[in-house]
Length: 160
Image: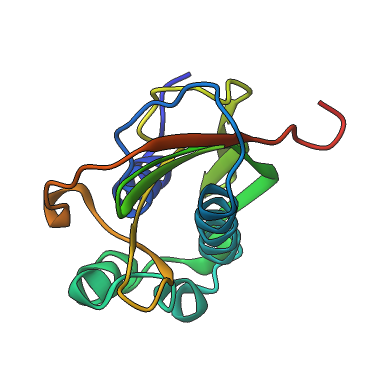
């Protein structure tokens, strides 16, 4: 299905570009996944100010520019869940499952992901762990190289 401008905006805002694999659960990956999910739920509920609080300070202005003038009622999500999270050092990528929808006029277009290891940039959320341990959303251009172990966690969407 072809994404609309709203879903294209969502891809820019979610800003993911990774893939994940299977592996053991960790507290770090669970926390990063929870932050990514809260961010996406706020974003697609049109609560842009709330969503911006999950964005790293270096990307907050870019987020506000992207959402400035966006119609909060034109975006919505269904059955969002954490599909998987891969943690590498102080960065993580969470793949969300569920449906993301945008409305232009009377037409609504939705994109659905059921693959917890999807490489679709629309469903990937990049995060960075701050020095205080808090996970925040970053955009790929903000990433700096890091090394470390890799762990993943998976969850299944309700009813899935």
